[in-house]
Image (cartoon, rainbow, N blue to C red):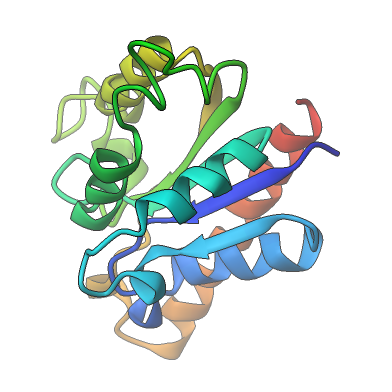
Length: 185
């Protein structure tokens, strides 16, 4: 398998059920993949640009793993991209370091999946919220390889151990779908 880099953009992975479970499955099933947990590496949002650029250069496939916060990526993942995807590195003059790599988005939402439809309460699909990532791929010469999405894994809905376990099981299935997508690349 190609070299896989998984960037965890959750701002507080310690409190997560879904994203933590997904990452645990990936670490177990993809022992050669590199997993960078941004909340542990950069709790102060002070990104080590050179280290992150080295991670990106060495990867063939980049997976961004995150929960949707306010219909977008968490602030820490946004900051990581702002700091790392620089003119001359990822785009612009001589900015071809990411060209030919593949990007997969793997994300969760607290809201149930049926809310993320044109007829649902939110009125947009998850795919429509990801257009900024697709545009970034186009700018940087990265191949957008798709996404894996799971909804209904809100911390507010974890009011019992049984509900937390149900969310964990749902997240394991998410990880299995992500692994299947990775196998196709």
